[in-house]
Amino acid sequence: MFNLAMKKERAQPDSLWLYRKESILTSLVEWIPRAPGIVLRNWIYSSLFAKIGSSVRIDSGVEFIQPRYIEIGNNVKIHRGVQISSSAKNKTKVGNNSVCFEDQVIISSGVQINTSGNNSRIYLRKKVNLDHGVDIRALDQGNIEIGEFTYIGPYTCLAGPGPIKIGKSCLIGSHSGIYGNNHNFTDPNRKIVEQGITCKGIVIEDDCWLGTNVKVLDGVTIGQGSVIGAGAVVNKDIPPYSVAVGVPAKVISKRTG
Image (cartoon, rainbow, N blue to C red; front, side, top):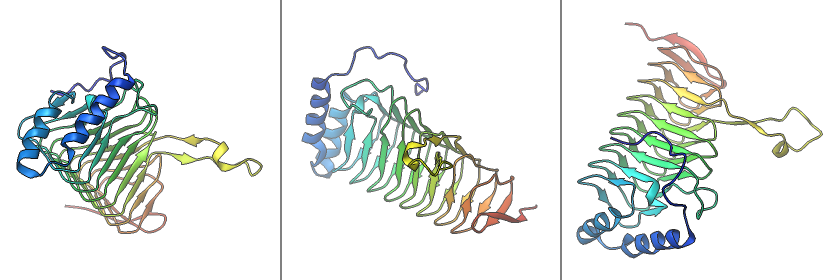
């Protein structure tokens, strides 16, 4: 079982020495070729990770940053060129972050998974499949969870300090964007960057299909069993079992039995 609760305190504070030790050890085994490299990496990583299960395959060229806050289940596959970071803003300080993969997760090449704020969490449930170039970033207080059997298509981005929850058995098309925050801009006398953001969060319920290049904006819930057409921009809630298309997305029909 994974520890889902964020620890309020760490047993020992992070240190520059510990960070350097992890960096050196992971760098030493990162590029060792396939058969010997997989065995050696798993042996070294077992002492560095919060948890690493059995039959885990980590290819060469995978970069881990602060692996002591990363949990990996059984039969997980992580391909070349992946970067997984559980670091806080200051890599040598406790950030109360965590990255957790349940069993049989597949991470394809070029994926970036990053808790780049503080008190951030990324959780991939059983048999989640992230295709090439997916970028997941949990910023300050961010909580991103992807449900069992869900597929995320190539070069899709999930980001935000606002929470993002994607349900079970969803299909997210390539080049989509799911952003759990929005910029305030109502005051023309101030720079937009100075006006702060909203972080309402996003929920995509079970069994949804989002076509390629769909954008989902902050504060939206997409109901169970819905289909969102390619290129749509979803800025309002979509009822369950709807088919929605366009910019902004509008419901054009219902899925009925």
